[in-house]
Image 1: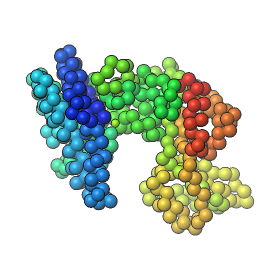
Image 2 (image 1 turned 30 degrees about the vertical axis):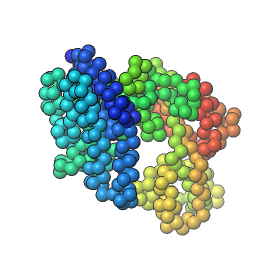
Image 3 (image 1 turned 135 degrees about the vertical axis):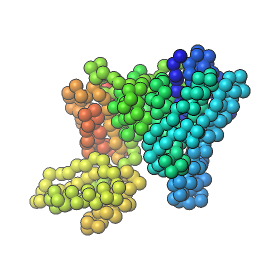
Length: 396
Ligand code: ASP
Ligand code: MG
């Protein structure tokens, strides 16, 4: 009898009708004689609504109280789901973070899970009960409620699968992971599988399918994570160990419009000055991503870099401190990334990419790479064109 940990996202439990439907799907698994643990997110937009209520009280709500508030969403959905299962004649029990002693490092709003005591869960499973766990929440060693960060129920599910040595299935309102966001490229193909590494790169680049921490956990403990459509037989995607040898050079494309580019003109060409500028930016906790520099002319260079949109004012403030008052700020950039573990073993991927950009007059403003990723900053209004061209070229 295998243990299955299933997670249902907010959209899958957004109404009472949907909760009843999830109850049916879960019961189906139980009937097949599996031990079933279900992790739920809060119903629909509950978490957003709770945040908005808090914001009506304060621009910066007290972090402890905010986490206490946000944890309530998952308490509602987990008890309702357990109730629905019981109503259909099966045994179920819901547990919150206190009951399963899900301990975290205590950071409000983005806690890491430290330990889980699965004793109670295992006892209930052995009694034939379906166990429903409130996702996203934990408790600090001081005994406060803390949350795992937006989308954190995925991580609750993977952590439980690790501890219970079970299979992990994440159910959501999309039927798997696509090579490209189908809203940007309607011919995008669904992936049968994707490696942990690729999924992590894509998540950090703006593909908001999975909570990154959950993928890291899956990778660390070699637990395959299945992502699929709730209550459906349509085949989804496995996030798992993938052998590079069989991979295409590129697995997916991600685009993000969350950054801006700042250019400082006529900076004295001096590495000490450069390091001081970036150190000062880092001290303000502003995350610089892409950087480029022109070659020196008469001892002066132009330096461009990207930062998150939200940090614009603070960054300009820092640079003014250095006496740079006339800065070029480009708010219309898109970070366009291609990701694939196949790049480790295939050469010429960058060349193909740049050739298409140059043939189609798409201006590349900055570039960064990792072993499995190439990111280009391009003009926002060329995003769709770039996605279509590259997706076609690499058969995504
Ligand atoms: N309800 C939380 C959120 O909206 C956690 C989750 O859905 O996984 O972020
Ligand atoms: Mg999610």
